[in-house]
Length: 115
Length: 108
Image (cartoon, rainbow over all chains, first blue to last red; front, side):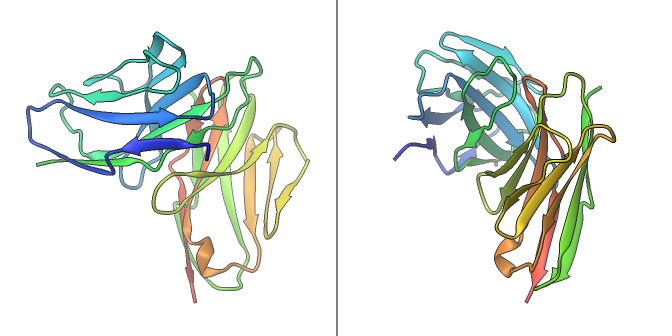
């Protein structure tokens, strides 16, 4: 089965702790993305990567970090510098097209709660 | 600043009704407009529109794009309770710029 997996499904964090959210895809997509979704809001881009060992900041990168050591994997670390990390985190992947028009496929999400 | 605005933000209708969801945009270097349905978790892809005036259809759902007036509509006919979801619109200009979504509730 091709798809995107995220783990864990639910994550609880104490203030001051760093946590890492996992995202793996077996769709052979070059591009991967991390979004944050807050209640009643659309998706906001945190980081994206179009190729291994390269990634770019999105609109709300502060307090987050990523790595892209393998094509299949794009983990997101929520650091203690992120002041309001409680949210639903979605990982997505897509092909890279010179036309800029592409469909993104999403994982099931991780709900992070800071205690 | 690029933006995508969806309306209404929420909508409650009865089963069997027809609904129209709106998405307007101001995005430089427009490439395409995408519609997604989000129930509890991951958004699932519905349509991608690149050309004006060409309707895309899938069962009871259909969508059309107007690149002159910078908007798209998503129609759902003969609604069912399973259509209850948040419908997201996104515009691509190499990245996806997302609207806030329309929360649709279908009452039996």
